[in-house]
Image 1 (tube, rainbow, N blue to C red):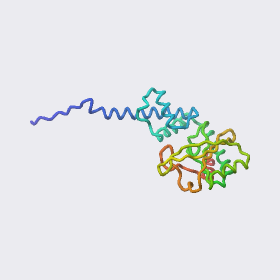
Image 2 (image 1 turned 45 degrees about the horizontal axis):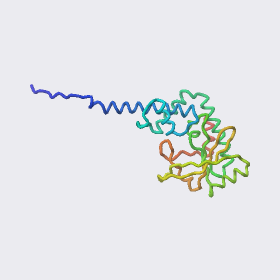
Image 3 (image 1 turned 90 degrees about the vertical axis):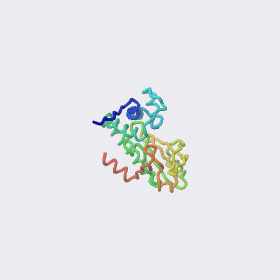
Image 4 (image 1 turned 60 degrees about the horizontal axis):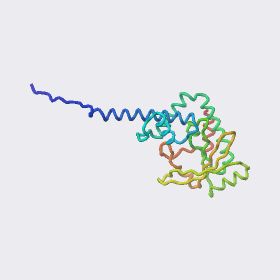
Length: 217
């Protein structure tokens, strides 16, 4: 009877699978804690939230971090479990404010973007709108004509051609909710910049879609 060759499995044979499983668990832990931080604090930057989460969990910052999409998924899960009606009220209030502002800026083809559109906005979230005109600063003149108080900010964003662009923001307050208007040229209405969550073209909703979202709530 021929002898069967015995195959010995060593610890090193099992290590890659164990390491991958541990890495996946670590990513989930960081994503869950980052989501909690974003929900309970005035923190909207995914990178900062992940760093804070790793530090609180005592995890080396050099470890493989979860993607922004993984954190957003954890964010939705957290809000679904803990948010309840309060989350819905925060979201509805911000969409109502968005609708009011969009109607007042209809001349500039406003588009709702970000957490208020995606449904992940919490009590700290701004209403984020993209507005379009040539030249973009005509929106500033419109705000001045309406007697609206605002301040300006600058933000560096990744563009759809892989480069980075500095954009101007106007920040105003409506019903105690911050609203940010990002100024773009009319040509930029054709293609949205990449989403900071998944890198795909950012979702933009026109006024009619925001009206539908409110009706659905």
